[in-house]
Image (cartoon, rainbow, N blue to C red; front, side):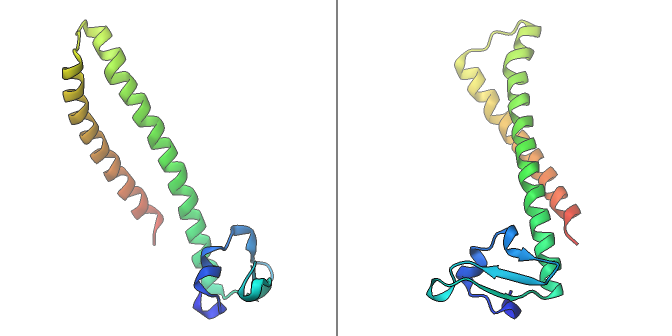
Length: 122
């Protein structure tokens, strides 16, 4: 964003709606002196911003889906498996099992997440 002449605070406050890709402009809200202004948007910056917003959206969707998977697996591990097998677990046994299973599940999800990021980046 250096070529657009933006300050660091202006870059951090950018929203997707501030990018006008048809006119290749960036609208800056409340810049120096509290004034709004427009600045140029280079083609390379536009491509970088599109990749960033696509990646950000994909990561959020992925994290929500993984949270749903974690909740479903945890529910299945501690509710359905003991009910089907007739196993009665004490609180101490459940805490020991949950530690191992959660570590395994978190490592597995980390590997999936890294693969997902590698697929999205060039």
